[in-house]
Length: 469
Image (tube, rainbow, N blue to C red):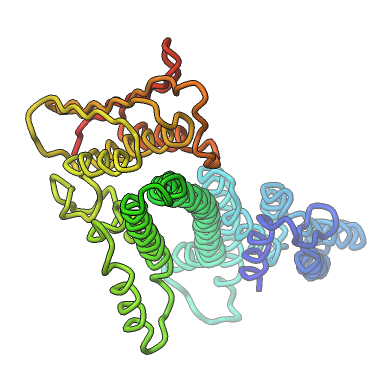
């Protein structure tokens, strides 16, 4: 019972919501236990005080009162265990305090008192018990009532056994209980520490997940802007040209109509492909895959360059599936094998702008070499978005596109002149995210991006992208 009570008490000390008992007790149950033990010890010492008073020749009432007071000191065992053991040692010569000494030694050994103090007090208690046992045995064993003459070693041996028997068990049990309690407390502290660490890790994981979600939303929005906005801008420009030449040059109007249709199909195909990637985690009903494939085939039948509908769709799919695209194994050149645009397609991109009536000059410097797919994709997107901005804000302005292939980096420059006076823009809406998206793309690869107006009234976009793939 004592062991269980102290273990529960030690456990409750670490709980802030545990009910506290009176005075120094942490639980009312502990207080009731100590009071009960003190009453038993007080009754025992009071009863043992009667024969002691007769042998010592002192008043019985005084002996009984002192014995009861000494026994009742056991109620302080959790507060002052050393004082309780000292009281037990003091009343040992009077053959009092069996319960007081046993429980006192147990409590002392189970407490956090230094071991040397425990050993000293336990030795004093054992020595007192040895002396009392030796005196009593020598007084009683030699009496003629027993008719037995023991050998010389009998009294010392029995005295030592009795002393060890009343001293060692409570001390050993108290040491075991104390060590066990300290071990449990240590394990509990470690468990609390691990719980706090897990809580912090969970919070950090949630923060990283939220950051990843925000990054993915931004990246998807940027990808849709780069993929769709350029083609829609060209469609608007061609539609305006179609309106202008519809009656004067039907053949040219027909060509513009074909271009508008092709660009619309490309934009629709790319948008449908991106939405399919975003919904790839959903369970499709039977027959949906076949219907989707047929629709995709019909949409891409007349599309120009429909084999690469979305820039780096595989990257978006990997992130949607919970994988990091930076750790995936992609082709070294990353161009056509990865499904995204590459630098070799800049000529086709410039040709689309020329077909829309823009005067674009393309110059390429350096030897033809392969770069990582992210580098080529980013350079392509920078040129694409810069040309889109020219369509929006400087329709008809002469534009120069320069590509420099260097060892370890790619440099692109798109510069347009000031639009001619009286020439109106294409009337395309602008969300102000084009330059921001280009800067984010280049910065993500550790490159440099510069944009701004020129002295001649035009606009310049320049990017240097290192090849670290």
